[in-house]
Image (cartoon, rainbow, N blue to C red):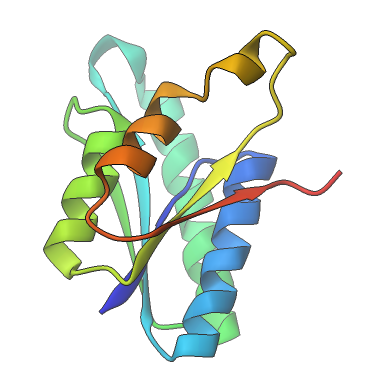
Length: 133
């Protein structure tokens, strides 16, 4: 069993990562960090290198915290929701952790499409966290 977290280098992504790491420590379980990109023309070499450097920092942080983990950068042309759900099924996740961002008043009427899809289609419970501030 494991905890799966969707990670992007934003305040919300870091909040999700920190909460997922805390849950793994409490449950003595592994953490699977997923960074999902569609790839193709949307992700150039410089962006890919920046993401890899960010994920190296995540690996170092989790190593220092003593949390058993696996970090996957997925560039398969899928939506992030598809990647998170597929990995959660693969590892038989205890739950998925995602970060949510604040939205405009109009945006509050509609939850982000990836977050909504994960909440509705995940094979396990989903913990949604907000960034502080």
